Image (cartoon, rainbow, N blue to C red; front, side, top):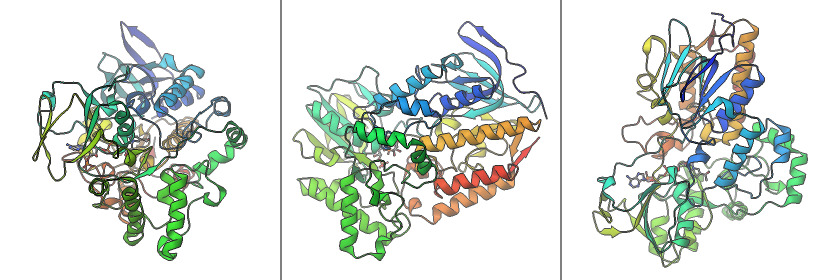
Length: 556
Ligand code: N01
């Protein structure tokens, strides 16, 4: 099925809409979309990127809520593909703020002159494969029509906000803000009373900051979360200088999982690498001492202090007890501490949160917590909301209610493949893919960090770069061999899905009603979506597939 790539690259501007035939259509201009564009240009391929936001940055464009910052450390949460870029960019804090990351990604778009092939404020509405031309047609809400050999979904894992099914949500007379769609001009909470629904990572970052400004903040909590202090700090320029000298080695450590997936840049040497110790094999005092050191060091690395935390209930309970004890020590009111202590799922099975003064915030006189698990929210009212027990009034409503994770954005786009098969139908019982990269029935389509890959269990930038480099090598090898068509083999897909499920079943992850499991979205199939086998083994496997003539991909 060989057609010469890049042979039909004509661009016609029709008013504000584009009609264009390209080698690659890319959906999304976050970290993945920008690097894809840069790579394809280097390969001499034409590409068109569509982005719904009016700027680049993806998750960092949308999530501007107060206190938003990354929970992976900044020196590692950045591209490694350009030595010049990594040397010239100066991160200022251990964990970068959303604003700093957005500046970085805009700098990348400027530096590599990416803007001309990105169409902003444009939402992709239809993505359809033609059985006749063997090409993809991509249509948008602005009337664009792009015809492409390959289509790549760089849509992010947490980009479709969940609208909570709370009765009369629109009845609230004051302003309502979603954490994931925060106004660019910010929100002034001075002298305002505020209600916030949700206590996930977003709320846990926002609550301490809103509390400092608001007259009163009421937190409506359904499920408490485990959270570890970030111990954020400015980066020491001398330390950064030393780190930058060895940047390639540090990057390799991340690629090969020689550090925790989340990051341990500033960690003293004795904590480097993944723990080899089982908590159940050491005396409890020694276990507590180790946990204390990790706690003081700060960050999500805490969850990797012992190797058995995510696979043994006994081990997990020791770690969870330690954190609950920390909550009791921090929160003055024992009843509030009890409410904030997670009891219903193993630690780490819902994404561990990383905070700055979250539990301390509940000692403030202007902060109160309402348990909406015991007394569920009945309805939003004009002045606030009513639970089965009481009525609450506030001026501003904040919803930090999460996302339709990993599949939400893909399923919104009306993607159809061979014989008009829709991705929605194909995934009706949960996402199925081969390596989280491709889907049987959807030839020449790739998903970046899709379900079935480590994605959200890893440093996203490391996984994004791995996927993109693997895809580009695949496309280059097809070109070298005079081919330009692939379809995932159905049996390879089945086997991979089975493997992903087996690996998940060997962990405690399925024991929580988490967004990893699709459990936060009513009616969504409960399947553990990411691949829990680890970043390094996964990379090795992908490389092995490539070396074995792209085993599992039928190429023509
Ligand atoms: O969303 P969540 P998030 N009534 O789904 C509650 C990444 N992230 O945006 O648990 C009442 O975790 C819901 O309650 P429950 C990170 O991967 C990263 O906070 O369903 N409550 C929960 O408390 C993270 O895991 C960073 O019972 C309702 C909350 O809303 C992921 O994004 C920062 C409700 C949703 O929590 C998602 O985090 C932020 C209802 N009807 C996010 N519906 C960093 O890098 C929902 N809830 C630091």
